[in-house]
Length: 194
Length: 194
DNA sequence: ACGGTCCTGTCAGTGAGTGACATGTTGGAC
DNA sequence: GTCCAACATGTCACTCACTGACAGGACCGT
Image (tube, rainbow over all chains, first blue to last red; front, side):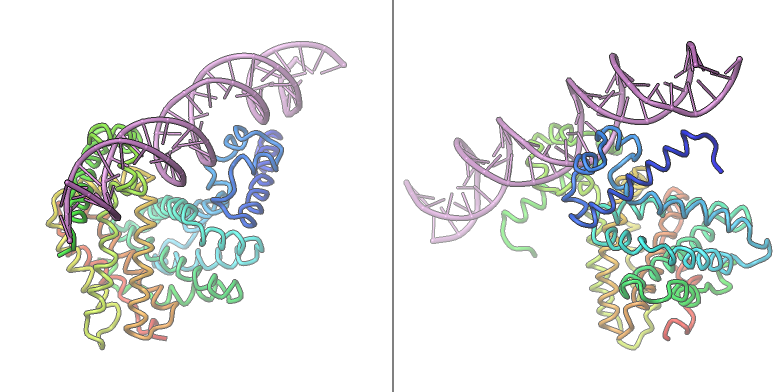
């Protein structure tokens, strides 16, 4: 898939480091675990750890912003004449379905939820992702900046509300169904086209 | 209004420190200005500065989360039979009107916008405020947790989209009118009551 | 005038993150 | 298989945000 061997090794190592870090953080708490402890446990220097992750938070949040690009790509592939809200709903619905399958996600989301620093960084990443999505939406539909911004922000709110409800249930409810409910409730009126 | 002399002095000093910090940050950039530089400029030790503000970011964001409690209070005062979206709209509309008057707000918002660390912290504060508002909404209307959460998140998205558009215009447009447009576009359908 | 409280500065320390340099390791062209 | 340039890693020294402990001084209320 992606080019050289070195690059593949690198991302494999990165994934292992992230997994180890997540375990330690989940067990002892994010703030209570120092980067040095993670480094020792992984058998590398802290300096090396910081060559894989720009910040301590990113050891947990790597996967979160992969979403951004994926969503933007899939949005680009939606039929050109579909209304924006339906497009956003469709893309986030399939995304919710897909990630509900990944088991470790619950641990990660719970850790993020109870750690202010992680919540802050996570929100920041999502905001950046949202801007990229808004840009795609604008290209695809010719909406003005305000409306594209508003719709993506509302879609983000719907997704996050669904996610929080899912967390409240301990991961037992149907994530995608919650996304559907949220999107149905917020569907913009025709005023949005103005 | 608030009790002792000491307390009043303290908050006056705090306000002055915040103002000075904002000036320095606006001129030289947030990340490029060290806490020690702010302290020197103010003629205090860094230790004292940190006794007034828990973090460097809070020197800028103090005012932001005063909003949370204000909004919660005003929401509590809305007529009991009003529909939730209208209540949220009304409260945030008046709030937008009020703050548009405060001049320094533009500088502050621009600084926040171009500084990732401030955006992150700001989002975190708003999220905490939103949770308090959602709780009030739930008490007042008997909505389930999911719906209250969704509505406040959507209201937050509307407010923020309006704010960003206002910033894009350099503060020249009517902030409250933008809030109106955003709230009108997102007004939930009756499905939200389910 | 005075006693206790509050404010402040100083000092020492932790922990995240960065730049520079030197030493290995190795993928891949030949 | 050889060899080199690119890459990964470790070490060292540093900056900066932030914190706890302690001590001296200012000042409100009596």
